[in-house]
Image 1 (cartoon, rainbow, N blue to C red):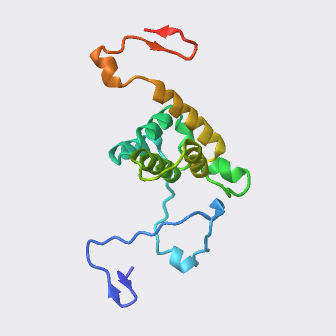
Image 2: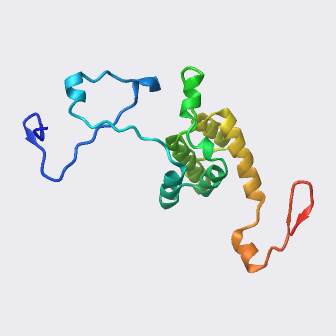
Image 3: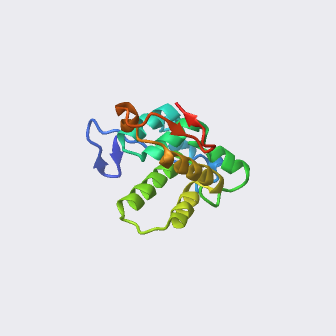
Length: 169
């Protein structure tokens, strides 16, 4: 309220913001003393897929991550489900962990990380959980078999075969 941190005077135009986990998140939290809590405006934020997608595209999140989540919006944030089962001692899907997945894939594709496909799958599952990681890996396999959009638009590709070898026009 007095725009000071100890002896330091906070310059005009600077906003002080504090962020933290809720005690119900079962993370490492401390109860804020009531007089201190009264000096803050408390806002609880929620995850919005549309906002995340807009950010992810501008931040160059890997297209497979954005594409998968565009089809499976409910898998962007599985924090609440992870908490229902007790403590989430392993990875689970959150906006942050999907960015980890993107960075892992980008590094592997760039050759910055020499990993086998099995190691890549283990890293992805370690970030977003086994179930979601397995579904995402299946999506990536299917996406790898699809023709490039440019080839479809240019007319170079006229049909696509599905896994049952039925031509789709």
